[in-house]
Image (cartoon, rainbow, N blue to C red; front, side, top):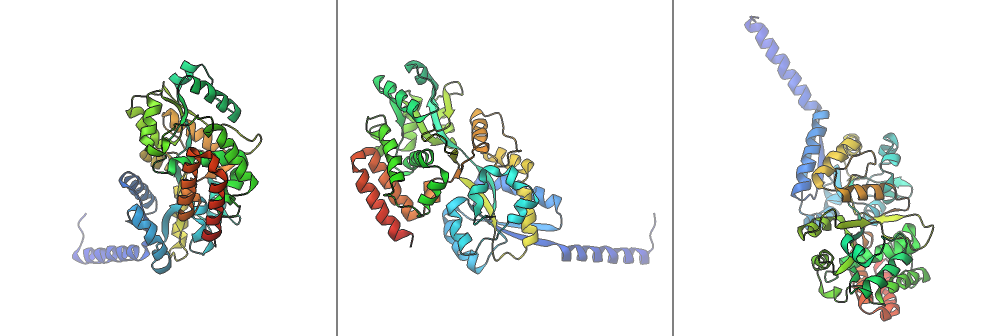
Length: 413
């Protein structure tokens, strides 16, 4: 069709006007994050999909390195807030909630039925009965074990602590460490403590302890260490663990010199690099200690929050609702090699991811974040030093707990 010059000019003017209006209607969502390269690529894809579904919203992502982010967040939340910010669940988010720097997003949870689909993480996202962000990924901790060693000694996979300790006696008779760990870097010992306390006293007590609300000299804490001593005092633990890195202990499991290892799912790659396969590597839920306590689990959870200084709250809530969707969490966790929180999401064929998804999705006690996330950094360091000392010198337990209690009195003021 031939157009006249006048028509063409009018048409161009109209298009320019539409374009100008579209630009005027374009809204920006400012997002600060701390992704490693692989998660960054996964989230860039999520953002691209979100923008395609919401062409009037432009998400501007600024990525920081991990350590820089930990320092920067305390500054940008007060001086130059983005609309969205990455952080962590549980006690780790409490300081920002209590100081009014994260917004209540309970309406996002209610409007999208997230209390059902994100049920496993709701407790760790809730303070004062309100939800303060959206969890999008986590990974399980538990006990990885050598199936061949179990067959060699002739024991079954235990479901109770008593059965686990009975097995330990048989492993020791065979010259095999019942439980291995490498605490040179301290943190692997915290994984053992967290599970000992979760199974002895439950998730709520564990959260109160790491939040500084319970004395370390409380009888319930002593009960946890008494159960732990059943493993340490008879020598069922790798003797020189304080000199080992966590990968060194993984080698002991691979070589059949140890039977069990309390560890996070990221260790599977190390076990398999050492030669283990799905036929020789097993995973079990940490056994029950106190009967009847709701089953809490350990799964460090990454989250996104709306800051108190956010300038575009409606679109920030729209992004959080999008991130909580089952299909979105499936896609992002396929890229991360981790677990979606949404219980309607899908996981791949990896048996360890499937076992973790089932274990975490059915946890009725709550999801702990790991000791060095649930406790303040200074308390975490002193606590982990105490855990390592206990596993070397269990006779020092009273001195260790008194030292931790003094630290609690000073740190949680």
